[in-house]
Image 1 (cartoon, rainbow, N blue to C red):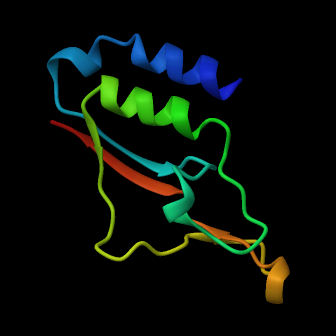
Image 2: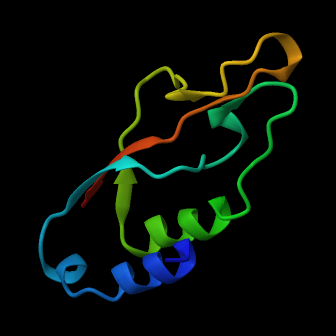
Image 3: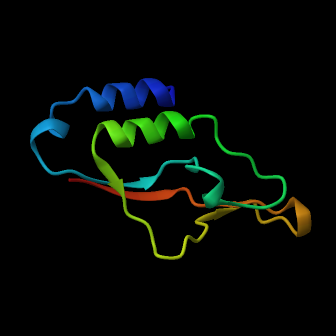
Length: 92
């Protein structure tokens, strides 16, 4: 399923409107440059869309005080790319 379609479907669920929510896992994309390490790394084109979804649902992304990568392509030197892909989000 396309990620935008998935999130649009998830956003339409009534559970977001009336109860607490905790959601976590590997979302397979980073939220911005602060979560990407490496000279050839690029921001995922869906990061803006996902940030808007978080804001619209009043979800808070729980992160460590020091941002650390949770994924790496395991290459050496300038070919190395690391990203934070894992998330833990809670509703207000």
